Image (tube, rainbow, N blue to C red):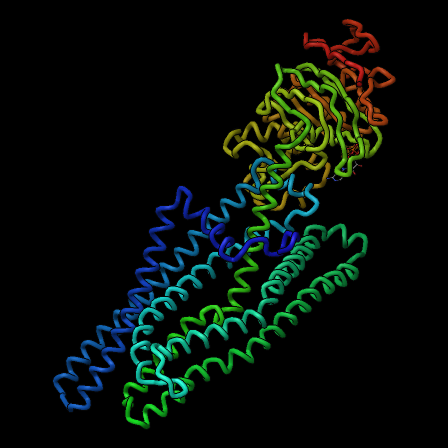
Length: 610
Ligand SMILES: Nc1ncnc2c1ncn2[C@@H]1O[C@H](COP(=O)(O)OP(=O)(O)OP(=O)(O)O)[C@@H](O)[C@H]1O
């Protein structure tokens, strides 16, 4: 067992049970058990039909032997019936297997992607140092193989068990006529079949055991190569601009080189197994005939019994060698299951990290309150120490500080995402709060969906959307609302930022957090959107992060993050034209007089940090 997130941590049985437990115990358990019963029933039907064909063979050849034309005619009708039944059952069993595998996969994918997408688990997984790599591919690819191959292996195991049950009695009976090395051993041939299959399985285990680890490595190498391809596609413009194409091609070759190297190891191991596999079946077919030869020549065993003995021995050995026969498939299947298990473990760890945060974020009475908040980087470095501040409803505060000092991390903490630190944050109603980052998230889909996000696309009328776009100088987009595309690629960053403001106008939240949301706009465009914000969302509270000094005039006061301390800014900000007037409302010890809002909003109270 290994600590590496991609290596098997549980026994195959425990892994299988874990994989199955979710669906078979879920709200869909009736469907799961129903489909499984259907597959078992169809498989049993197929086995019964195969036995029927066997019996028909005997009856048909007996009729031939008797030159009984009438019986042959009857047998022909029986044969036609058996053909129809075989076809029907083959298609029905395949259909039931496909339905079982697909329904299981659908549940598993929905279960995993739900856990991954909800509660910011995907974000927290990114913060874990040893999280499962490429969760997206585990969800989309590994689930496919884990479920489909589980069903196939389950069916073949059922075949093997029933075959074993069918032939074990016959082999036991026929063994009585075949003494081993001159000694009559009850069930001797059966014992020999068990020993032979046991030895074959042990040898397969010894030779093929590394195959599981190799398949795990192959899966990982292939998903890393796919990720490298996707990453290049996502960064095509930046790579082309900097002329990094040749370097990327080298990197991709290296990444695919890992796939080839691990494939070579896998193929070599499969060749080793082939030494055993190629001779195993042949020996199993000849061994009973050679051993029973003396009894046959001595007349203790008829030709029919000898043939039956050979068939029974081969079938029992085959059934007992299920593991040996399916080893490469089992190794591949296990590697997919291991990757899904590692993802589930990482999701659990991410959820724990999300819950274990030392910073208590709670709903407040209406203000945004930081109470002795300390934030640390994952390596323990203190970013912010003992920050305390109260931002009142309707107040507008600009947060400034050097690059990398922890401003965005303070926002992350306020959003309940940052797990490292301590203190308490009281947040206003999340339903009335919107955070606009530097690059607004634009979902895949139509422009209407992008503008309305996170509300459903039907929430706002066309007229309201068009008006919001026009006010943000994006009138040209109003006629393209139904156009689907990669809006995050086709719109410039400045246009995306203005689209973010159009979104704000539509949603009209009471609290807005802007994290360098105007960084790509020129000063005139920045003034335009901030003016718009001030005018149209005049009652909304605003906390912005921004580097430009000119931004201060759209805010009531400025806080600076410096050396880990949250301090009032040295200079009072200028009032925004037409929105606020300077009013020395009150004086808090240590606070400089600042511009106060005109329309009776509550004045902010600054509490010096620490
Ligand atoms: N997931 C992370 N893992 C490790 N370190 C991180 C992580 N996120 C942020 N940091 C570190 O925390 C520090 C603060 O980052 P933050 O994004 O808050 O800076 P900032 O003040 O917003 O900077 P800027 O003004 O440049 O955007 C940085 O040194 C950054 O490297």
